[in-house]
Length: 197
Ligand SMILES: Cc1cc2nc3c(=O)[nH]c(=O)nc-3n(C[C@H](O)[C@H](O)[C@H](O)COP(=O)(O)O)c2cc1C
Image (cartoon, rainbow, N blue to C red; front, side):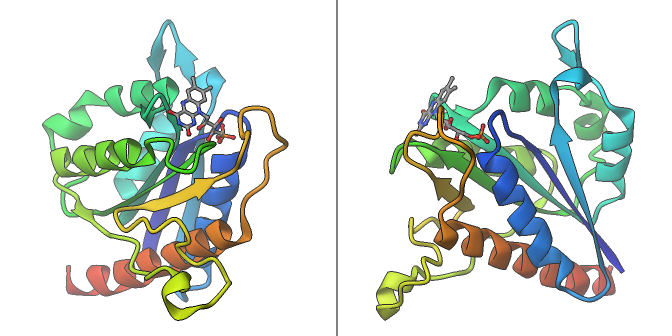
């Protein structure tokens, strides 16, 4: 049995749809328990973030997938406040040797999404975690139109919706499939990883 936790911030719902797709993919793997943990406003008090229940679930996880919309070429402020909050996690390396992965959503085709993924990977390294890449070549290479990794991102999963600041939350079907497949991938790796540990 392995636990995969997906912890993310989403203001208007696009990143949430990605998180759901990752969870659906991970759930398909037998013996994997999935926790979908959304960072929400009520967890912020006096400029700080606190939710011991979420931290406990992250401490119990074998794999943590981090997600944030891209704001100004990096993670959203709310996500950064969350990640900065539990200092004893870093100081005691509580997430050491857990698997990690990342995803982001933005409105422009590039939108500097890689800055967000780089930050998520750096955060994983600071915590001694083992980064899991996307693992899917873009479908265009095979002249397929299912949209798998259509944005050609290998470090983490990207989603993009034109005008995402104002639009009703939707997700490109290819981005949804990429997220779903990443959920499956990290869950399968978690199953193998927990067997040898
Ligand atoms: C403060 C702010 C900064 C943003 N910066 C970027 C950016 O650098 N690149 C980009 O493509 N989109 C940018 N956007 C658009 C967001 O990425 C988009 O609204 C987000 O992906 C929607 O995700 P959500 O529905 O999960 O909140 C920005 C939006 C806000 C509110």
